[in-house]
Image (cartoon, rainbow, N blue to C red; front, side, top):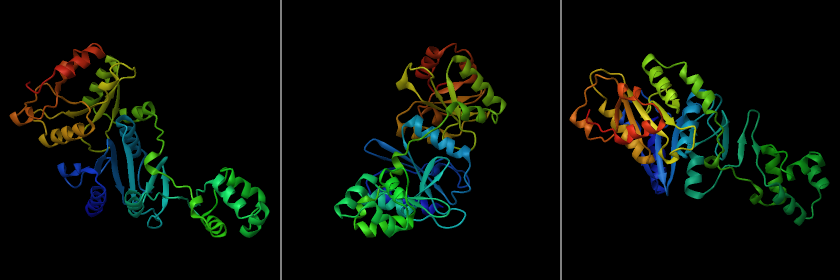
Length: 334
């Protein structure tokens, strides 16, 4: 998988993206809900590669969705194959409401601004056509709907549905239409970067809370009592354990806050803290680390400038305003 990540990293860098390989901070066996972050002209992409898109689970996809919505970033999901075959080029594969594309499709988008037009489905893909443009082209060629339907072996009503965008042709039918009308411009490209993400934070959070350990549950309850919401990323290691945000519009520019957690009574992981700092700097968001009361902080840790909050100090917070002041005023000199 490392060579695939490097290849995608090279493609993006060649297109003048600034890239960040966060996996360098962790052992190879560990995985984030993204493998690579890329930034260009203020837009951030979170890239995740899947060896088999039929082996993914809903929890991982929910993490990807939540990050994208909280950070206003764009998920870029790359698949190598499904259970049957290698992913085709110029096609979008849907899983859990999210689009997956091949590496070659990504390369065509990045280098040539050439977007996919096939929606892959079992039994054959369907093609997105611009129905209005198809109608104009048919009329310019002096071809009636009846004549076109006879050439394609479909009904006149089907042609009308194609032109009204209420039905999509199969790949074989679409290729015949392109051949008859002599115009590939009627292909309607799909932009996987602009996909509308649907995600229920409340429903996902309830599911995640069932898997929290006692220390995490205590933190969750404190933040809930303060009057804020949390989203936990407990299914896999990422630079943080939870995101904290306000249900209200108060201090909207202050959120989301990303927080790591350390239950180690002896020391804080410098690697995790460094990764958290890199991530929050990239997204220009605030972060903190919630720790046990007896933890010791090294001089190296203190230089990372990530607020470190002991659980006993968090327990004293009564409301959201006090929480904001705690985060703003906390230093690593504890």
